Image (cartoon, rainbow over all chains, first blue to last red; front, side):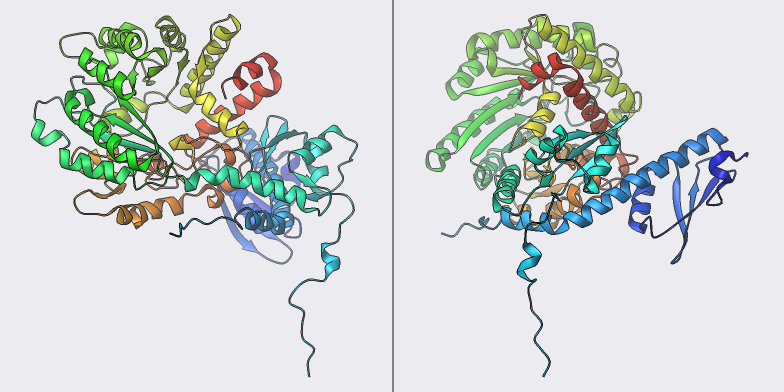
Length: 116
Length: 484
């Protein structure tokens, strides 16, 4: 399979039935990666093969041997989803405290048990 | 001696910060924009740059979207308690429905039926009353269980088979429940879900006297309806229309409603189906997908996919909106339910769109044989041998055993959207629901993998379409908001 610009990057390798991807863990968290893989499960299966302090190695297993255009489409979709998931992680982390505060406040005056 | 460590943060940690703080929200991509929603159901559309600016605290307070985000509880400018109080109050209103369980009680008074509908898995064409009718003892036990529910509003719905084949028992249940309600003082309503082929003046008089509503099936024009709903020795369509007309004369127009089911034969005929509803005097229609319960229904479901149903729904909604533009009042019920989830502070009680799931706590089924199920679909699954949604039996189990047992709590606990993979991140979560029975039937487990779930695909497609209409079509928006 020919490579194109994405594959020219040393972090991306296209193979016949998979895409190999290397990411920087300082940029992308494992949770965001796994959630992106879950969302795209219909198009590819995510395999996290190694995680280290400097690199995370991923394989996106494709359902069958596909042409370059399809594989590139899967990769772009995965990367876009990964960006969204990373942003979601950021929102979740930064709003965790206030979410708990709101929930605690919402239920602070309720009583589900009737006292007769 | 070591100095004691403070247990709480210093006051300075709670001092107002400059700029704004983020409040919890979720977002989805729709085309080239994002929709952001929060736990109280508010939504805002954002350009990609606006979303990243928002999360990175770069959003300028002078932008119109800034004020929108602030008024809809996505950002907080200071640490005053007012904004948090308001958000907490809205959240509590939104989930208050959970404490008001169980509102809908379905009584399967008989399994006998004079129809042989292709998509039905539960009816029996038999005269065997002994084996397929509910007993008076079970009926009374079930009515007593109805009043154990904390819900202030209670609805008893009679189902079958064809429930009018056991009208004597319906009469008894209505009278017994009415008697118990003199002390209970609940807001009690009755509805009979019937094909109306056995409707008599005596039944109508009783319905009028006890304010019992009727719900029937109307699948579309005569050829389509009669093909899908064969009636021995006659036309089901003619029987339904005759019954609707008589019921309207006796009970009033609003006391009769109708439901349709989308089969492969119906999938290309949505305009005709809607026009049939309008022709026969209905001002609402519920475009319902076929439920995948039972072998026959599963084989029918396989003949069209989610995309086909979504196209059917979109075409149907367009026709409904056209009718409104032309001056004929018509409402699509599934859309109305979703709009209520989006815009109403308390959401809706529609069983399939609840989190925790609606099984058992939004509705419950008392089967003809005394068994109790967490949902109507649960009893249909049981007809195929999957009895996991059976909560117990009126003869053997107490209310407490059925409502607090693992049979109910385990699927509720396992499928709460707030902790479900993908759902917990989805912007549509506040408008969606957990459906463990559907996912059990289609994917073999309560939760399902949402990337492969036709429930998720359908909800996502419908909600994206609705938001598109709300944002881009002022006429459609005005009409649809009138349905809430």
